[in-house]
Length: 134
Image (tube, rainbow, N blue to C red; front, side, top):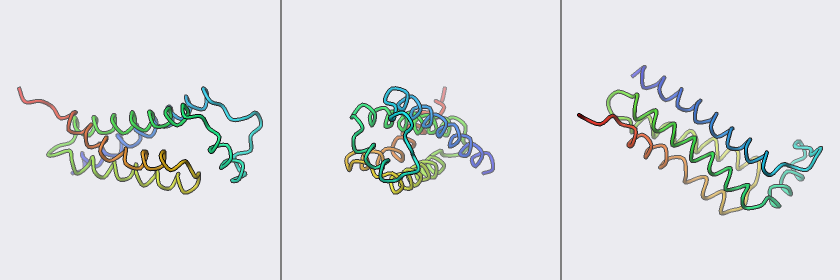
């Protein structure tokens, strides 16, 4: 039980690092205007509304990578069945995403896609990451 807790915790941290890396790469490819003020909510809304599709694809790719790797770690290192831990981690990723969407309004299609990404991808990664019987 303790082992599964720490596997879940480590997988969340690593997953978030990969998500952050994907977002940072996206901001490198699609940078905000020089001197942009991220503390002005209205300017952030306008910037997000004007972002190209490629920026959203890059962000979603980071979400997919982070949740898949978290799931793979869970599948490989949990004892018993990995599905409970993967469900908890995928749900926490989803809740963090919902909080992010409340702070930074995004296009509806992107909001729906990102909301339904984390749980199935984390669980799928956990299933694929299970050690195979010899």
